[in-house]
Amino acid sequence: MSAIYILWLRQLKRYLRSRTRIIGSLGQPLLFLLALGFGFGPIFRKAGQGNYLQFLAPGVIAMTILFTAVFSGIELIWDRQFGFLKETLVAPVPRLTIMLGRTAGGATVAVLQGLIVAAICLVAGVRVSGPAALFYALLYMVLIGVLFTALGTAIASLLSDFQGFQLIMNFLVMPLFFLSGALFPLADAPRPLQVMAAVDPLSYGVDGLRSALAGTACHFGAATDLGVLAGLTALLLALGAYLFAKIEV
Amino acid sequence: MIKVRNLVKTFGTFVAVRGISFEVREGEIFAFLGPNGAGKTTTIKMLTTLLKPTSGSVELDGLDPAASPNEARKRFGIVFQDPSVDDELTAYENLDFHGVLYKVPRKVRAERIERLLKLFDLWERRDSPVKQFSGGMRRRLEIARGLLHTPKILFLDEPTLGLDPQTRNQLWTHVRQLNEAERVTVFLTTHIMEEADRVAHRVAIIDHGRIVAQGSPAEIKSSTGSQTLEEAFLALTGETIREEEATGLDQMRRMSRLWRGRRA
Ligand SMILES: Nc1ncnc2c1ncn2[C@@H]1O[C@H](COP(=O)(O)OP(=O)(O)O)[C@@H](O)[C@H]1O
Ligand SMILES: [Mg+2]
Image 1 (cartoon, helix red, strand yellow):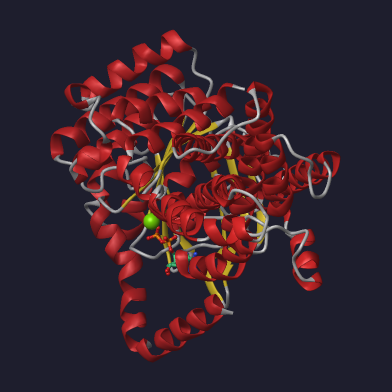
Image 2: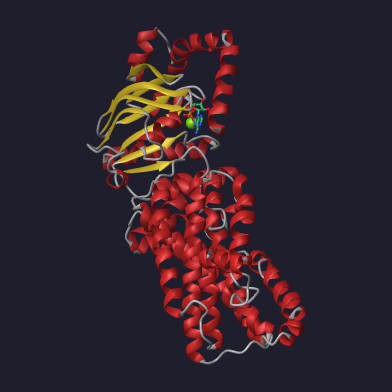
């Protein structure tokens, strides 16, 4: 337990000490909110879909968590290259514990980053249905954070340098985001797009987060959203721990 | 305390460790000597659960590190040859992190951290992030960290690399004291022969992945008719260096095979 705590604390300290990283990673979500939120707003309204900024905000919050979480997981490569990984690998602590500590740290950082974007959304005029909404929203944010940190860690366990990083960003993280229904309503999307969204785990996170914040019904249903996210998170944690245990340096 | 039999490690087609066998007794200071690339670090990595042996057997305090890594890890501490501290954390935080992972109780932890940071002249800089440290300071921090918990076996991989004579002296005094007072078994590598001659009870000389001699420094010296361990070392490993020069082409082939092997 104390091992998980110290691993978590280390990641949190590293995050809080890198102000450039905090501010730098807010640029993209702000751009999305500004350009898309206000740019597409009038068209969205004319099409009878309501307030686009309101629709987009959960998508951008989820995006922020997705990117930060995957990156936190990928930081494992960093630790391997700078040698710190060895220190944790020879410690008398089960690899599963190390995996859990790292994931907890990465997910916390991702959720914090998501909360900053959420606060910006509130300031920009996005409305929340009530205090309970915030609680459910936080639950979905945590699930998204843990799931994708575990995914990032699992992937990073297989890589020894940053060469594959671009590949992962372009062929995994970007599609996860763009196909998730973060930017457009899934209900009216063409059939193939709907199928792709259905196999994209982030879709369930965006859907749950959106319905929690706005107090509206889910596209997939709340039980499905929660079930898929929780199940996949458990699966990826197990996979990550397995792959992590096989690391040699 | 450490029993190694026919230990082999291959990377692709390149054989880094070619079936070595040796034994380190409890309470002994054992030095592994060899030129660069001899296979010292690779051997330490296999002993400390960082690499899986290709074949052969290892026993640490009666345990097989490959079969029960967690139990084995409880028994040793290690100072790595390569950097392994967290640059973003302070010196104190790096040691504290280590102490928590190794379950050193809070009070003892604080005392030992203070003592070690003072011993290695880092106490004044305890709250500076490591990224501001010079190479020598980092090295001192690595060593202080390795000594924070008292393991049964202490692995030191080229611990004096990049240290000034004063710190070197501190280190060996401390290691000898640990060995005498707490019966810590020490396995170290170095290529400073004079150092090994002074601190080690027994040494093994490894070259090209093979052990070419082992015994007490006195035995090694007398068997080669040398005055110093350095002379003995050169007598034992000199021949292979000449051989390597003669087969430069061979080595190039080996490197290219290794390269292809790594990319596959
Ligand atoms: N991961 C690896 N992949 C391929 N070759 C390696 C790897 N690690 C070490 N080697 C090679 O194995 C040999 C022994 O290396 P090492 O054990 O580090 O030597 P030493 O510590 O005695 O200087 C060297 O030729 C080195 O290049
Ligand atoms: Mg070495």
